[in-house]
Length: 380
Ligand code: PRF
Ligand code: ZN
Image (tube, rainbow, N blue to C red; front, side, top):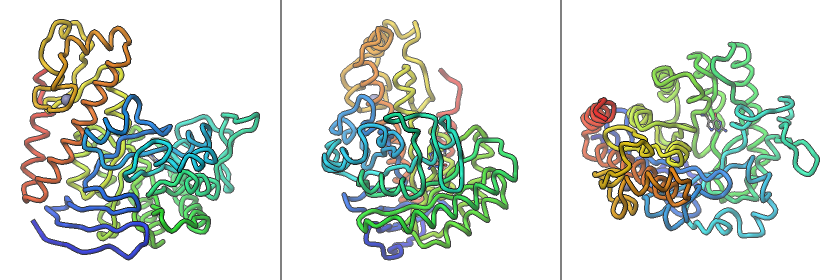
């Protein structure tokens, strides 16, 4: 363990304390307007201002210290104006801890769109008879109305595999759009993060890091991954990106991922993650445990009296059987989704806590090997 206690570049909206490192793995703490969170951190996704099925009280109980909302969806409903009137996302949701909003950049990749131009992106979906357009300026305006502690630059994400020329164009465009985001961003109580793109081309990742990280911001994200390139190529790309990012600022790997992705990315110096997986998969009955994933809706769990995970202390595991949750989800009872989500997010938060502790104690490498060994072994 190497002690590297230091404060990041001064920023009114965010400070990052890098407490220690173990190999490339980092243990830190991020402080923003609505409080702080320990890193490495996992942020559950509340796309429309709610992590589906979770009250904020439930969410806190899983160990989550920060959650995520989405500009594109919240702009459609209820809209930035109404959210602002309700006291911003914090007031509306009744979540008084840190929040991060994504810019809508990922929806450029994932949703039907009419046009991508230098000005911005026009989506196929219409609101009040008008096609929705997002530009860097509009994304900043909406994110300022939503009022999250950390807001994301509006970026151009390309699919995988991407032709080199398109990926290169997206790198330069993402950099120009970041300059426009910085100019449009006025609230000093919100921290704006830049996003590195470049698909899986090592030289484009280097170029993007240079273009993005030379713009002085309180934190930076690695975008454009987990879009179908597979685990190993994602890790190789992180290896070609992370070493060139500033050490004194938080690094956020967007939209990742499976537990094995989190462990391997933490080993490569990533501090923050978000992903819909634990909540989305929970709703179809997929349960995460130390020994891997399983489907609790299968017939073999119909009369199983054990909890979802015998190593877990969440509310669902303390009080209910696999048999009951099998019945609930198979009968489409909403409590089934609620309990499975509570468990899966708790599993992710427990994993993050275990990684933080392993880094502090200088045994991350052995933790990583033991975790992956147990998690990826095929004993279910
Ligand atoms: N950009 C933005 N949001 C994102 C991504 C990105 O590249 C990803 C990539 N997996 C998830 N969410 N703005
Ligand atoms: Zn549990």
